[in-house]
Amino acid sequence: MTRDELAARRAVIRAALDMDSSGFAPSKSGNVSCRFGDGFLVTPSALLYGQTRPIDLVRMDLDGAVLAGARQASSEWRFHAAIYRARPEVNAVIHTHSPRATALSALRRGIPAFHYMVAIAGGADIRCAPYATFGTEELSEHALASLAGRKAVLLANHGVIAIGASLDAAWVVAREVENLASQYLDLLATGLDPVILDEAEMRRVLAQFANYGRKG
Image (cartoon, rainbow, N blue to C red; front, side, top):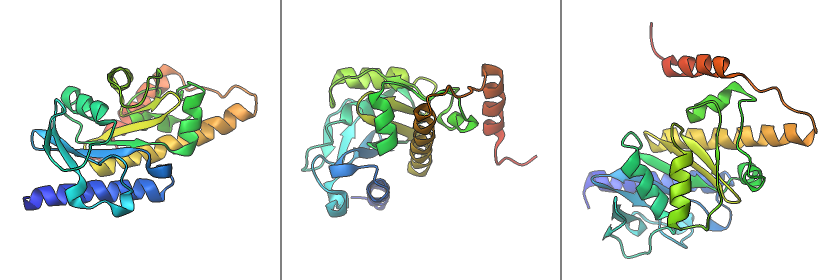
């Protein structure tokens, strides 16, 4: 194993441990991957994150063939592979079962632009993908379609996928999706209709996000 691969494996485990310690992965749910070489590294199935070692991660190609690893890959490897095939700008995928976003997904509702921070996921809303059994090609297809033009998606009756150019970037999106889902559920509980920002405002917000942190 090269030094670069060992560093990538350790980074995936750190992200998985952060997800777990945040309460986003109850009962060892969820999974994490990063692009590596011509494929990706993904957390294994049925192993507690606190017990996961770098050697336990599974290295796969973009068609799902195992390149290295004695353990079984996460049951959700299909949508990881599909995202990396379709989205060359994506280098990390984090799948959570964060409690509030998962609760919202059970309503089969996405998150509209009730707050401008919805734009962190790349568009004017965060969609909810149709339900399909976990680990299936059907779920992968639904997730990929609903991620079009976005960095996050809710999976109906399931959880969240967040993607990014790095593990850190994907984790930022995953945390904000949980925050937004919590706020939106609180709004729904009032029985009132939240005011939704219009498309013109969300275009301005997205333009601001594109320039955020740049000099000049």
